[in-house]
View (cartoon, rainbow, N blue to C red):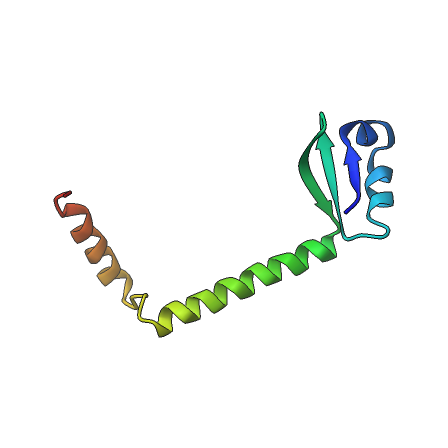
Length: 90
């Protein structure tokens, strides 16, 4: 993964990012010698977001299948939360 420094950005601006992303989809920006940020093009960002959402959907389906979820109306949910909040702490 290409590395950019904060000074590269100060001197070259967006051109430094564009040149770093020519061959790779992501680039690391370091500040005072420490890796601090990652930049990527929008297509890569959207791809990663889709992957996160797909993973969340898979986890939700697994929770439903394993019975780790409660399906109820909004009123029943609020009543259950109120009951949980009123229980004494152990």
